[in-house]
Image (tube, rainbow, N blue to C red; front, side):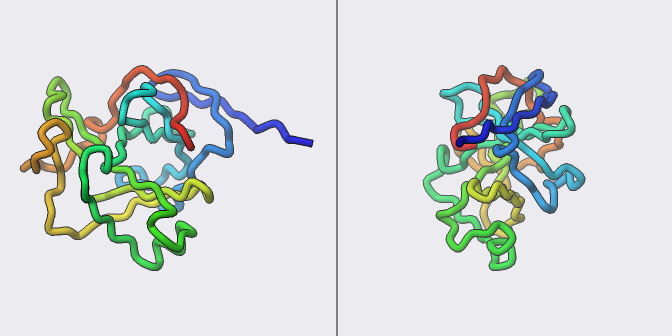
Length: 173
C-alpha cells in the first residue's frame, strides 16, 4: 500500500507554499552567509525560466536566486574534492546537479550575473547539498546577458534575494 507524502507549509518571500518533505535538500554546512540555515527547497519561478529560488524552509527571507550554469556556459569546470564527494554521497560528478547563485543589482537587470566562485552541488537522490568554493583563475562573475566576465565585487545577499512570481517546485526537486 502506497504512503501519502508528508507535506508542510512554508512561508517564502513569494508567499505561502505547500511542499513535500521528501523534496527538502539538507545542507550540512549551510550556505555562505547563511551557515545557520540547513534545509532548503528549490522553487520554480516560471516553467520556462532558467532561474530557480533556493528557499530556506524555516526563514522566509532567505531565498537565493540560482541557475544552472550550463544553460548559459558551454564549459564550467567545478572541482569537488574526495571529502565533499563523500559528504554528498556521490561517486561521480555526473550524479550531482550544479547551480550557481545569480545577482541582480536593484534596478539594473542588464547587470544580472552568474556568480562562479561558490557553486552549489546537489545530490538529488540523497537530498544533500553543499556549496563548494572554487579557486580558479577564471572570472568570479559572468554577465548573464552578454556572457562577458564582470569586474565587480561579489553580490550582497540582498541582491541575490530577488522576488518573482512562482508556479511551484522545480522539476526533479
